[in-house]
Length: 58
Length: 256
Image 1 (cartoon, rainbow over the protein chains, first blue to last red):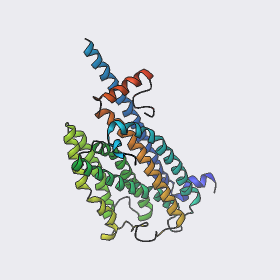
Image 2 (cartoon, one colour):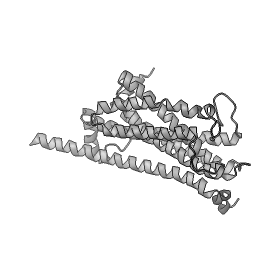
Image 3 (tube, rainbow over the protein chains, first blue to last red):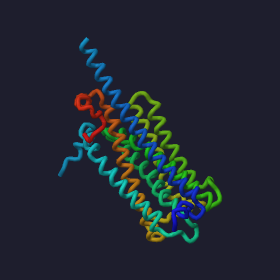
């Protein structure tokens, strides 16, 4: 079986790669949003901590 | 015996989860690589369906995960409502997006398999309809959780919704037995020998394990963020932020 035949999936390329591609995309989106949320939380907590410290000083 | 209840406290669970994530993520990558190798290289072409049957290597594991994650959430719902344990509601929040993702993938891959095999993207078959309801339950839980301002009330209401919706899981599971459905009966069941070739079953089980490891890794990563948000006024989070601000590493980054 050569590469072209493999990607053709016996004529079912759309269905097979459409399925695996969707899962890959969903995982990529999930990992990316997780990363964004992590950074947002991190920034927010640091900011509120600095704000609190500033307020107690003044 | 190690006192596992120590890890029921967010402050002890947070670093533990951080240490576990790389192991589960690594296992997920290795299992997925092995599973894809079996699915595409080792497993032969199906004599009836041709190559399109290879969709089942992700369709079945995704459908299992969608149902299983919901059951785990229902378990945490019992803990939340019955015992008021501190991590249970956070775990429910962390699991829901991943469960919804797998359920959506099960429906999507089912449609892509159904079109060439049955001649229809979608039919209002009992199993497909009840799986769609499962997706709506996940989305309903997430929406409810976001809509209620008061954290305690959101936790209780969310747990209640998930518990009531749990009745849908046996309906999905037994739908192919109870009704004369277009969706085929179970190929793998606990009570009888699998009705499929050994190598296909092996590939499917490896992919299912990969999905498990992925779900655990992602949920642990997500629950860490939720723990920080919810515990932000406690001394341990304050110390963590201070220490990480000095190290310039980032609060939720690193392993501790």
